[in-house]
Length: 110
Image (cartoon, rainbow, N blue to C red; front, side, top):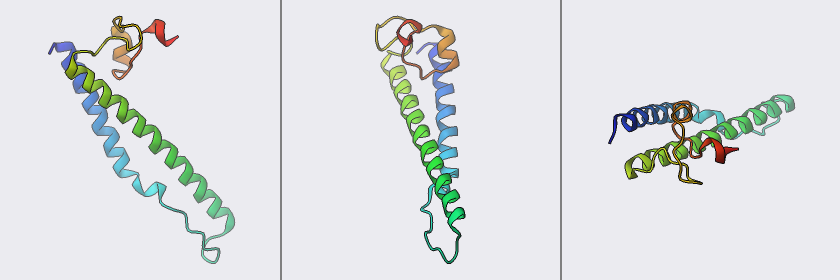
């Protein structure tokens, strides 16, 4: 494996670990909202429900990011990293530096 691949693999693994830590630390944010009107007012429940919905969406996006990272790591192991999944051309180094999990070259991304 080349130095370049090692560099990207290290970055992807660091990003993956950071996402996993964030996900673990925010598990409580998406807990079910109590609907007991005697202990919580209607507006407070609505705020809590909105917060829960936002937390669920953030969690969903983080899961997508994890899947992209895992796919990029698999491409590194298979020797397919750095090639556009659409046309097979090389992905520009600057694009990979910006986001190592990117899957398309500039032309195909347009």
